[in-house]
Length: 390
Ligand SMILES: Cc1ncc(COP(=O)(O)O)c(C=O)c1O
Image 1: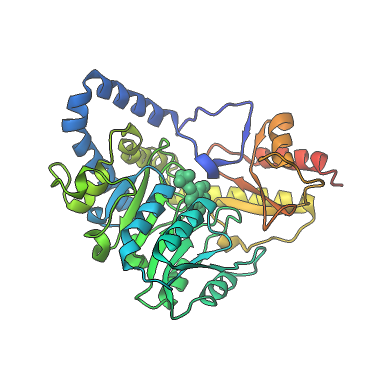
Image 2 (image 1 turned 180 degrees about the vertical axis):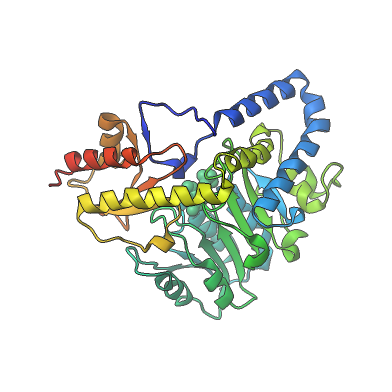
């Protein structure tokens, strides 16, 4: 069983934002840092690349990808920025780049900048929430596709609304000339990901969330036809300098983007193994127990809030969002006052987002192996008190 370093006085219901790392992995990262600092030159020039390949191969197997197409990036934001930069010279003035009303803000900003640089426009598909079925998402996105659509950015699991999007169905319906990028920030470890069968051009995801690797580990997978032209958001030696350690120019673009602490990405293979052995049924059981627990937590919240389920169970992985009553008064703080009260008065970490815009809002819970049903009972009790539900 994995053990965690989490503060026992806090109820942790926001694995979705920054994840959490088992002690065994933190220990490995410390060992790697000691090894690195005992001889930084040996580590960076001789030990780094073979260790990176071990992590790359384990991760590629886990997400059903060929290792030749997979590179590490520090986070999903960097992955989306790199993917966009890699296709900029294929965009034509007047092209439309499609995002949704649920696209993660940082990534939407990256699309906005690409559109401005390439004289393209950003088209936003208004995806509803609450929603009744995956068809609501499919219809909203396909409804904005036009002859001028050049690129679509899809979230595999949406951030504010916490639903698994039917990306397979959307991708199948798109013209093959449309560039498809998937932001799977939450997906690997939460749901089964099989890149070999998905038909995407670019797929990026975090390892620090549901794979429980240290922060600074994420990946970008690129379809074969884009690998020769792919560039990292931070251009470095790999752009022109051969690739002495890396297996290809594509790998070299990303394997070295400047000196940094590479230990997070070197811990990915071990993170996969540690979580795998956390349950007798391995990853499948980790995913299913997290899923069952978050659904049970959502039931408790929905009963206390007297609301219908805002999304069907089959669109939920291990995070779930529920609408909560609007903010009574607009606040200046960047943190929602309910989120602040839950943190300060109840020691509960749970995100509350303005959605679709202030004062309406959503509260999002998560379930990871360190959670128990009592965590959601505690949150329910706190919400009843803070929102004067009754
Ligand atoms: C859908 C989605 N995309 C991208 C990100 C950004 O992740 P990072 O901050 O690791 O780049 C997040 C973070 O939660 C997310 O939920």
